[in-house]
Image 1 (cartoon, rainbow, N blue to C red):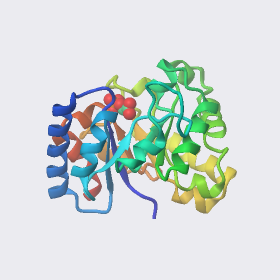
Image 2 (cartoon, helix red, strand yellow):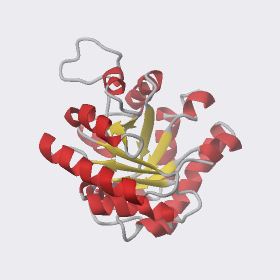
Image 3 (spheres, rainbow, N blue to C red):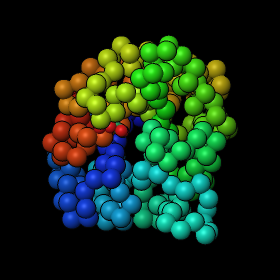
Length: 253
Ligand code: PGA
């Protein structure tokens, strides 16, 4: 059975006090209402990680939003996978479209980040997605395939099976424009088929593929009901405790 996951991505929001307060609210609501074996994760800003990891327990797991590609060294201002792991994080987002766009992270770099995350026993949540132009040009399957091939398929089957994929159409992130359930399912099925071709059907069947992009309590149920959608990567709605918990609860239904 592949894992059902709802991961919140707070991005660069909340100062320390706000983050701890919001996280505590989320843990309290999710603890009361989570009934199934779905996994709830919050990917918080770095400076919150040490504290929220202690508050989350088994109820809400913790992730970082990025890591550096090297183990350690003279990289002023950077945070390593080992540091992230050392405060109790289990997950790390790699290759979010905002990292690709604003920090010029390319597939080769992201492959390095994925490897170092795995070497430090972190589960990478590896993001792929097409822009609006790419969707309109009709070549988005090729774009997505390249992101997979160059960023993830460099891994052995054993390592790949420890990763989670998030499909986040760039045109749907923070815009209020959600991919329809059919559009999302079409891409998720494509990703799973590519995984089966690269590795094998059993690995593909076990890969959790999350949808991200304006996912909210209203549209989550329809998205998560799709055969190849195993949960969500939630931006804006993860900054509201009730909305995030309601999205987690969707899996109870
Ligand atoms: P959004 O962000 O839910 O605010 O669209 C999703 C993401 O960027 O992970």
